[in-house]
Each structure stands twice: as structure tokens, then as C-alpha cells.
Length: 372
Image (cartoon, helix red, strand yellow):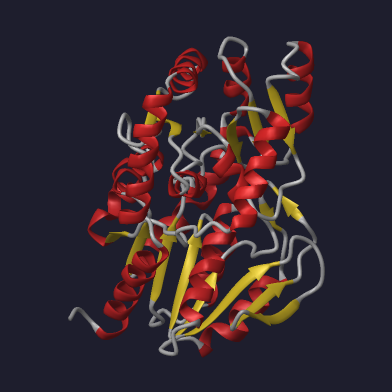
């Protein structure tokens, strides 16, 4: 089966969708039943076609990125040129260029699967301009893959196509930590003392401004690993409120986050917009036996880490409740231990890479061959 995934960007560009696309592509490439390829855009630059980890990657030329969207005419040229060579297209949404390309250039008999990652939340005018094409994509799709039941049920657009939705939660390699990683975790504790951890790009929907507000009253220290457009604003808030000893931003992301997960007391995941639909970093922390403080978004976020079972869930955009949850976990070792063990077990049982790949291959086989 020759499968072409289509997404805005592809690693080394950093992002949750990009990592998910790579994991899917590499996972399929290791199975000789599949030929795995990806069509994406450059962040900026000329067309590039490479093969890495058994995956052929087509990167269309791009003039840059505007409103999180690559500006590329070359994408349409590549789309028309190569899609006929593949048995099935797996389009990751939201990606407006892919919607336009499918509508104007794709043979309508070609099987299409849509992996629906999130609604378009912030660019409302943009959304309504593209709504007809998104709707037609979902109507044409053989199957719509979604990471959580809650996302499918709460998305205004997905509600119209619930009969097509298949739920496949993401999965990761469960960590087998080396002696070196344990030593690195010990060194982090020695350097920073006790700390909680937050990981993710410094952008509007991650809820970091809520976290900074919460840290004015919450105990403890938080390490925030990430970079992005909010960095300078966050640093100013930290300076103005004398939070420098309580909030540390590490903008140069370490290659291996495992020691940070091991060393921290718990993960804080304060996202506050529907743009956040799952949160792979929750699984990464849980797999290391760490509880998670997350928010009650109408997406898969609170389905990953469960309130009072693997962590604590607080109302969205509520710094006071977030501060109280931080205080509860920071000051109660027994609670952290119990929730951390629950987190480890849930990650092992529900979010393994093997389970994810098995579920995905089952869905793909059904599309090509029909139900067993």
C-alpha cells in the first residue's frame, strides 16, 4: 500500500502535528506492507526531495509562513505531479492548501483519509472563507481520524460527520531510561532544586500567561521549556512581578527531555484554547511516572490525563484554580506518588506506540480492502 501523508510542514520543523506525521511515516516505513511518503512545504526556501528513515519527503518551495500557513504555489505543482502514484492520501487538517489542491486537482476516485487535528480557532474570517472546502474534504473522506472522542463530539464541524470518525489516540515509545539519563536527572535536581515542568511553544493557546499569573501565589518553581512569539512578553511579566526565582524559561530546547521529566515533580499543561487537542507531552510525562495538571478543554486534553486519577484538571483560563492545584501537588508527596503511578500505568495501557500503529494499520487496511 503506497500512502502519501500531506501536512503543512515536516521535521526538523518543531510542532506536535509535525512529530505525529513523522512518527506515522516512519512507523509505516518499517512495515514492508507499506510504502510511506510525505508531501509538505518548506518553512522558507527551494523545493527539496529527500529520503530519511525509509520515508520519501517532498518539501514544496515556499516564500515563508503567514498566519501559520506556508505561502507556496509549488505545493500545487507537486500535488498534481505525485498524488497519482499513491493508493491513498492521508491529509492532516487544518491545512487550507491541501483542501484547495484536493478540490481542484485530485482524481475524485482516489481514496482520501482526513486526520483532523484541530478546528481553526483564532482566524475566524479565514475559517469561514475556507469552511466550504473543509466541509467538502470531510464529506469526501473515506474515514476521519480523530485523537479523542471528546474532540469529535465537541468540534462544530466534526459533529456533522460523527459516523465517519474513528478514534485513534496517539502513542509513544514507552521510555527505557538509561543510567546516563538518571545521572542527568540528578544533575538537574542539584542545579535547580525541586521544580515542576511545562513544555511547549510559547504561543497564545498554551496558557502560559495564565501560568505566570498562577505563579504569583503558587508555591514552587517551574521550568518552561519552549520558544516562540510570547517569549519577550513572558520575560517582562516575570521581571515586573519579581518571579525570576520561581519561573525559568529554557528557550533552547534540549535534545532529550527524559531527564527533565524524571527530575520534575509534575507537569503543568495549562492550555486554554481549542487549538490544543491532545498534548503529547502529557503522555511523555505520564510515561515517566509524573502526574499532570491540565485544563478542562472541550478536546482530548482531559481525556489523556484524568482528573484525580493521573493528575488534576482545572477550569480553562482560571489562574486561581491553577494555583490551588499546583499548591496541592507541590505540598503533598503522597498525592504526587499515587497520581504518578496512575499516570505511568495509563500511559502504558493506552498510549503505547505499538497500540497506536496497530490501530492505524487496521483502519488503513479496512479502507483499501473493506471490513474484515
